[in-house]
Image (cartoon, rainbow, N blue to C red):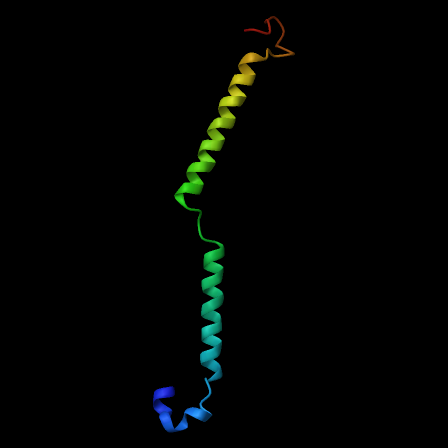
Amino acid sequence: ALLSTGISELSTFSVPETLLGILGLSQVVYVAGKLVSPPSFSDLNAATKTVRELERSFCDAAHATPDPSPPAGTSPTD
């Protein structure tokens, strides 16, 4: 649009409303895409490591603590 009006009309140049709307929509889509982007591999690796550590501590605690109410006819250490 600026090239079609020329340098002599520069002082009165205004950006068309439709172009402003398209630019605004483009920015909204860009920002929304950044907000919902998937986590990076390092975030995923850290979360996986945390889950594995929690599982290990759960298994250790379950192994160390006998069942307080075992099924009838069994002992707590079975």
